[in-house]
Length: 130
Image (tube, rainbow, N blue to C red; front, side):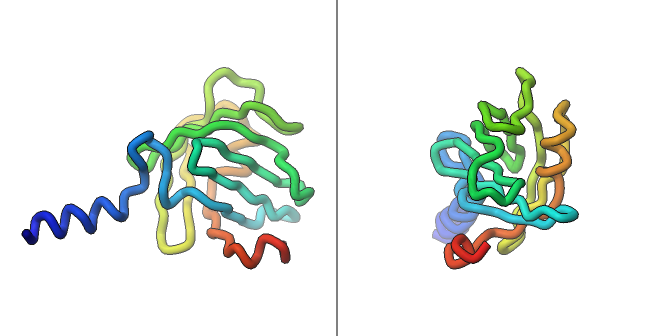
């Protein structure tokens, strides 16, 4: 009984779902980089969008896979998308309402400059006041 309870509790804190996509990672995250306040939104269907020009439109969009606290980001389009066949590979940790992406390998300097670092989960109420 105790083992079953511990197993259920630990599975509820898992970072991935059965398709390898994040549960806790889903949502909108923001950070400050110099004079910019980019956001990245991860959806439950394995897609992401990045707005780093504060235009409220996706500057980059693509797909992600998430497994065992490692994420691969592959740009599919956008005005600032990377034109590489391979995506960017990052490790991440989530602590309460923050996520930190640590570079594993990424040939796109622009993506590294935006993604690597600590982000804060955006409250639904902040979406309109950003």
